[in-house]
Length: 329
Ligand SMILES: NC(=O)C1=CN([C@@H]2O[C@H](COP(=O)(O)OP(=O)(O)OC[C@H]3O[C@@H](n4cnc5c(N)ncnc54)[C@H](OP(=O)(O)O)[C@@H]3O)[C@@H](O)[C@H]2O)C=CC1
Ligand SMILES: CCCCCCC/C=C/C=O
Image (cartoon, rainbow, N blue to C red):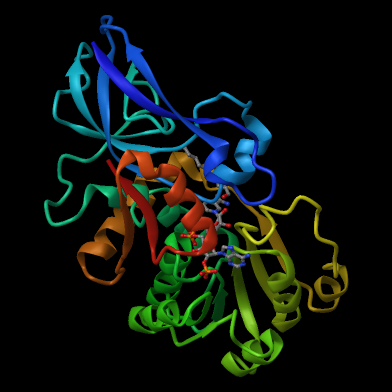
């Protein structure tokens, strides 16, 4: 008999999530039926989407949503061998039973030199978000200028590096001087700390006096309202995330987008990475290749201990992560 630890949403978040909104519980797992496998989580992901999705899709008492890299401990399913690693979407659980549906095996060719947690970050959902958001939504072209915010995070750091690979000039914004230094190390052409600049408007003008062809927006709110006025004619805005709004109890008001959209003839498109689930393999293969070639670098903010899942999640929302926020069990 295996006892799984799980984190439950005890109380719907009001404003910023608090440790008391979560409950750690234990569940006895039954023995395996034919076709089933027992898995143990090795790395778990904490992501911004958990905040708005919990509000929309979860009830109090539900196990927190999320993905993990898990090791197969026992198998009564011939398609899954003991010892193999998978990416699962099984929520904040230390152990779980699966019938194999929806599990993604890590390729057997996964290089020993790379942490398996990368399958939750640069070579996982956030990396794919950068890949499809840039290539399919922004449709960036060599020689263009790309702006990305939350640039030192899981998605943003890949966006900037892919835009450089694609021959663009890249401007990134992040919330600390250490993050700005990291962006420069990654090869961003311009980077600034949006929390300390005296004027965001001036900082955006200084970083690219001619404006921006592409804006990969992870933040929304006030930042986006200022940035839209810096778009070039026929610019493209990929609306990826709105983290500055996820914890608002009262929705923020405009300025509204219509006037700059009309006069600059902009295209603005929201997207969710799962739109390209049928091209997941293509994206992962490309990202893995760039990582192995050293063209895409990565950093992970690893929190040790399953019991620290809420702290890691809250820390990520506060901006304490450089690169991908991961919990190592
Ligand atoms: N559409 C899609 O399919 C997907 C969308 N996303 C979205 O992409 C965005 C980035 O996600 P991800 O890379 O995983 O997360 P990150 O690794 O970037 O972590 C979140 C970061 O957001 C920044 N942040 C937090 N609050 C604010 C704020 N009020 N204003 C500005 N920045 C803030 C912090 O960085 P800093 O110190 O710089 O402030 C923090 O480190 C999120 O909005 C997320 O929801 C992610 C995956 C898929
Ligand atoms: C299997 C996990 C799918 C996660 C999709 C995340 C989409 C994110 C939206 C905003 O953050």
